[in-house]
Every structure is written in C-alpha cells, then in structure tokens.
Length: 67
Image (cartoon, rainbow, N blue to C red; front, side, top):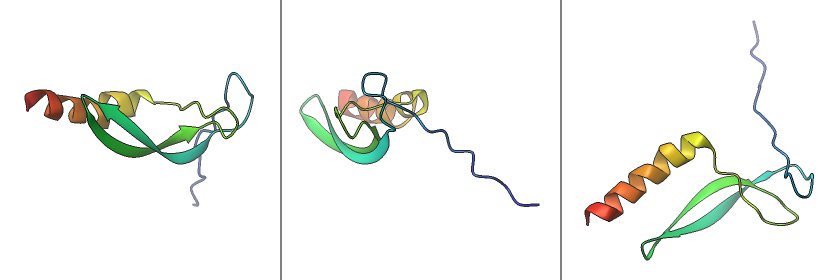
C-alpha cells in the first residue's frame, strides 16, 4: 500500500501567496544561525512552527544563555 505525501501547505495571511522554504538567517544575543523555514515569496514574512520554536530554536537559545 503506497503512502500519500500529506505535507501541509501554508499561505501568507497578508499576500495569500503559498509559502516556499527558504534559508533564513536568525540572530540572537549577537550570534547568528540559519535554518530553512516557510517564507512568503512576496513580502518575505516567515512562518515559525511550534515544533521549530520549542525544539531547535529553544536549544540554541539555551546554549547561548549558558555561555
């Protein structure tokens, strides 16, 4: 039995454009890191999922604050 790819597609609430994954630079406490996130191709706003915010971003934040 074949599995269907059920990846969610998100649209920008401002532009109604479908978000496309784009490598985005983040800065926190003077440190920079990049991550690929869904981004509006028109206005550039990014979507940060709950999983990313509570996972990878929280780990980086904790590591930087411990220094």
